Length: 473
Image (cartoon, rainbow, N blue to C red; front, side, top):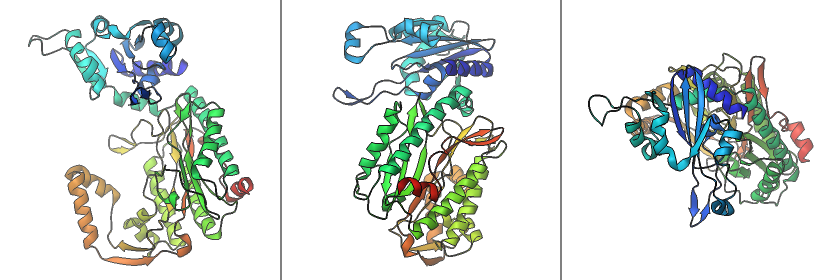
């Protein structure tokens, strides 16, 4: 329970005096009496570690000291026969560090007493749970002012920004869980490399890999596995996983285990037949060079924006080397010609969620990396087989200006204007090298920023051409 205790203490230091209200997830039914596997709400888990659905948490903070109060499902022998054992109120106190625990059913009755003396309330007032549980109760729980019963003295603050900031910096305990998730994931990817052969179906390789995940203790997948053979690797979120693997093709696997609620996120691309062809090797080596450079950039004081800008610069050099673009490096960047082959970010925060909480900016400026932040680094090159000839617009485009214009004008108007600008621009027609068509390569690792430099949690997954061919041959 140490991680959530540390999280509550850190939150209390920020709030100093106030009450925090948050709610668990609930069972979601798929159809009739069949339900989706339950996973706890990440923020609720972060501050409580409570694993069951249908719970409320109230954290009372006085002079920067937090008190946890949990409202949980009652023990019920009949229901437990159907759905499994419940921890109950005694479990909340004995095992989950709640000062007091109450019946889930008594939330509206007890909450006013708990909030007596607190006017600063932190909650997610944009969520359905606020409308469902809190809005009416808070109106009655916090004393009214002189304007009448529609006006409570409560001052509501959004809890989300505070938690997002806290979740950005991982504690030692969180790093341990992420490390375990990464170790399991690496094992699964290595097994996939050893297992995959021409003639197998993507889902068969995926099943072999996921078997390792679960066998090593993963509770679930971090996200639906992408097992993309051949041309499918050029589809960023491909998850059909039903095609047969061809001799001589590449297999891109983006898949990860979740352990202790923390997720890894790893991508490897390798040859189904054991050896890279010369064109495949050419593309792969360029992506690997870019990725290694990106990892080196995860240092205190640098930012994801700077890493991404460097990625675009180096990757644009790669695109020129591969003859995938018609002009030089400067034009490839300024006219965003690279976007035809690399159309996503270089990385994202990682933790309880695979795309974890936290902004890349602070007060409109790029957020600097700090000790304890965890990010992915995942450049790629995707040469779509459907575009053997590309007409590149001769139009300078600044991503920052595009983003600002979209904020000011709104997405619909801004994107319409962008389309018109592109259509009116002169173009240069460029034929893509035939032996590169259909090659998709992405390489992704999970990196902890430390005061001693980047720490790669997934470095044991084979990544160089020599390492991969030694496993797949």
